[in-house]
Image 1 (spheres, helix red, strand yellow):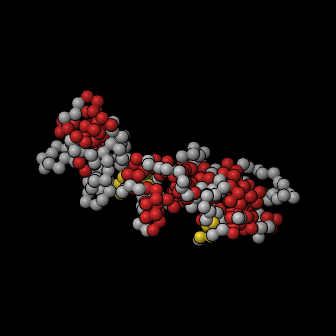
Image 2 (cartoon, helix red, strand yellow):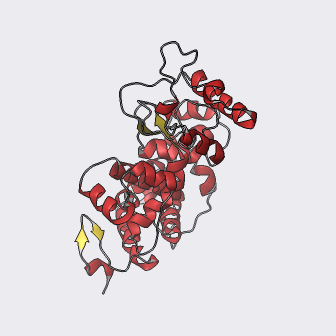
Image 3 (cartoon, one colour):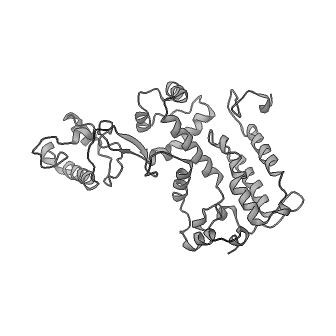
Amino acid sequence: MPLHSRFNYLGYFLKLLGYRVNDWLWIIQRFEKGISHWTYKYLSLGGRLILIQSVLSSIPVYWMGLAPLPASILQKLRRIMFNFLWGSSENNCKYHLASWKDLSWPKEHGGWGIKNLPWFNLALCLKTFWRILHSKGLWYQVLQFKYIKIPSVADWLRYKRFSTLNVSIMWRGFIHTLPWMGTHMAWQVGNGDNILLGIDPIVGSHSSFILPEDLRSYLEDLNICTLSHAHNSLINAQSYWFTTDDLDLGGTFKSIWTEYVEGLSGAGIRLTDRPDDLVWVYNKKSGSISARNAYDCIVRSSSPPATNPVDSHLWNKALLNKISCFI
């Protein structure tokens, strides 16, 4: 049975045994249908660039936010956009004056600001997964029951209990985002009750947040498991956090704990009455993941060309795009 004749839910075709590459061809068809309304002959290079940035790159956004598209499908979408940009067609092949890799960097890095589709796909999945995990609606309840199966999302991320057996294409895509999500997440300190000592990263702390397992076991024997337990609440205490003398630490444990506590104190970390919050460190305002800051994070992690102030200045000037493209 053709995929387009199957059950359609909110614009997404549902299939029992998962998607294959051929099952994504309907996105190519929608893409080509959208581009067929424009005639490149009557558009300048700058006009075609604007259409790619604002219209064509947005056509597959909804589906890219739900699942990772196959690399071959993204490659076909990229080829369609690239041919449209340079005015190429089946009957009129034109020379491409620059590579797609160079043009897909942000403008401040010397590119033309065209989205890199695999990176954009990953950023959209990151945003969708973040919203689902931080909601308490039906989506979250289904995922909690079917896949997570432990009381806390933080524990699920912390101990990496991920399974890709007999899962939906959406969940497989979310698993694909977890290395990015886990690497760039940290705890905003509140009361410290949910932050496991020596395991969880803390926003603002530049010391190593990983403590050796034998040191953590020693601290657990002293009933010091979370960050709140490491606070010395005595009125006449010389330090806000327990010192090595308080814990009777010596040898390498003494130097490791001293470095850990100095990192907390140097960052001005103090406990409050509000609960701890797991945040995305690349968004300092709200701590949540948006498609924009996730995409920026991926770009910065991909060794982009050095920032050139001249490039940003040229694109911000009141120049025609077809002129800015070649300056």
